[in-house]
Amino acid sequence: MAAKPFLSDIKAIRQRARAHMERGAVTDSYTLDRDTVLKLLNEALATEIVCVLRYKAHYYLASGINAKSVAAEFLEHAGEEQGHADLIAERITQLDGTPNFSPDGLSGRSHSEFVVPDDLAAMIEENLVAERIAIDSYREIINYVGDRDTTTKRMLEGILASEEEHAEDMKTLMEDFGKKGEPAKPAGRGKKK
Image (cartoon, rainbow, N blue to C red):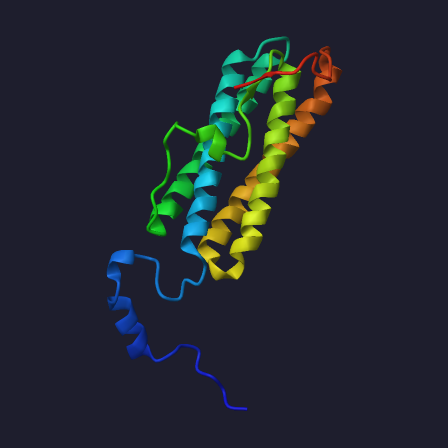
């Protein structure tokens, strides 16, 4: 069995690199449906933006005996979600797409919801639900992209790891919340905006 060379003909690679330079990082070896990937990434971008807004709203509206420490966690997560949004927007532009930051239709593009409950325990619960939605969404996108777009896959795997950490944080807050003198379960449902 003859050994196959690692790279194709270097002259052919050089010629392909000069063709369609306006596409930047998107070369002929990109085999995914770019429009589908861009749609999925713009949905992920909208999800991250909604998460930033929800965490920020919860940060400012948190009240009660444990509010200060819980609100600090909300603010930290808001910053991390903003970082995810920035990574996704950058990847969209690398794929020769346009990140959709338009507030029109933002909640429709987002996988998670913007819910602002009246009490702190319900805020924690809503954030845990949103993190679980993000985890499942990112897993599905990662499985779709697979090894046909390793750059997007690696980026999303990093974001997924962060979302899993956020979910664990919210789970811990929810478990510990009732032990600190406040009800562990939310009294009522929040308002979906």
